[in-house]
Amino acid sequence: MAINTLVTIKDAITAFADGHGQLQGRVIFEADDHRSAYITVENTYPLLFVAPIDVQPTRAMNIHTLRVYVYERINDDRLDVWENANDTSLILRDIRVWWNDYGVDEINIVEDPIGQFGCDKELDNLVGYFADIRFEIPSHGRCQVPVDVRPLPPPPSCEDAIQIIEDTLGNRLYTNDIPSGATETQVIGDSLVNLKDTASNIISSTFIPAQGSSGIIAPDALLHLKKENDGTITNLVLLSNSATNYIVDNNDISVNGTLQFDIHATEALDIRLRDASNNVITPISVTDSGNHATIVLPTASAPVGATLMKTGQTTSYRTGDDGDIEAGRATSFLVLASANPFGNTKRFTDELGGETYTNNIVIDWSTYDGSTVLGYYRTLSATVVTWNAAIDGALAISVGTFTTGWRLPNIVEIQNICKWDTLNLSIRNYSPLNITEPFLWSSTTLGASTTLAYRTEYYGIISYQGKTTTNKYIPCRNFTVTGTTLT
Image (cartoon, rainbow, N blue to C red):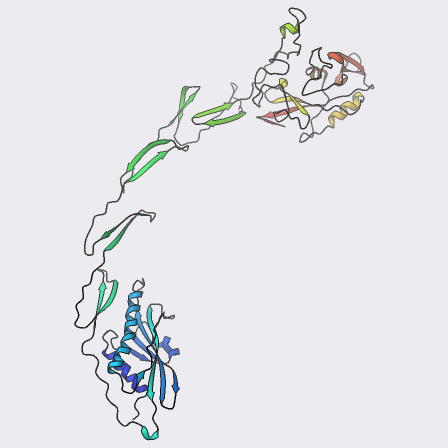
């Protein structure tokens, strides 16, 4: 009967497993690539799995390398991974210790094994360590085959104790070894309690002694109710786990300091501007500053039979003349008595309400009726033309976005921009028109002789001449006014 073979090592490891109380006698010997077929959930754990790796024969020795796995089952929540890994590493250590004390004579472990940690890829509910252990077995010739086998020594009579600490739910907290015959004091750690809100934010943390009880007070909530502009409405303390209703007062609406009505809090305020005839009024601008709202309304349209404009003559030559009385509408020839839709009192502006005149369009706000206004293209025709050519040329004008609607002004529309001040070289020589040409066609025909049409001359004189004669002209156009937008 052969001795000191792999079978001898197998028997010795079996004896170790039978005597190790923690392994519960579980040991499997099989090839390493068959490991997944034998390591199943039905096994009892912890268990040993031993697989031969290689052999190195020499003249005097055969060195066998065995890979030893120690598996332990872990809970589904995986909280006991570290404890079970610790247990399996200690069992690997016990193999070396046991072999030194009770192993087979002449069979030595060549070097201390180095354990490696890992989880089984096929069964992720197992964890453990494995190590490659090298055994030296003396070689025998044909005449040196042993004839006697020494029986294996019995396992230790008194093994170390294993202490397992669990909570009241059966969850394993941790495991440790107590040497045989020793006494150990085990301190159970206190519990950490985190108080959280419903959004999982930690409100406070406290420790509760092991086996103890403690009352936890949830703090009250502080509610700051504020306006959108950060003004405080009220501050409230809300008891924890309680509900509080708070009524926000309605908003009082005052007009020029006099209370008129109120609106529901937090609801949108829809201000509807209408005139006495219930027509919708579009404001020029609305500004908000704190609890003050300023609404600028357009100038009211002129009533039927409105006062005529001032002539612009300011020099008086006797009491009661035009320069003395300055009869007519507006503050002066260039200044309105009330604001135009752009919020200023300038009679003449460009189409954007300014005075840059990029497109050479001059708006005359003295003609504003609440919805339309008259404007002039202040660029003179390049040459003198006949009356018919002046009408055709004005109709064909296109300026910026105002591509249609231009026409030749009638005699009243030309007279309206005449400044009757003899100090001027020409009756229209003032800013922003700056027209020095004295003779301008109008679209008005002389009724007594339809071959003649009216024109202006120096100093505001109105004359007429044949339509086939030639003069220069400027076009005009009616603009629709919507707020501060002209179309």
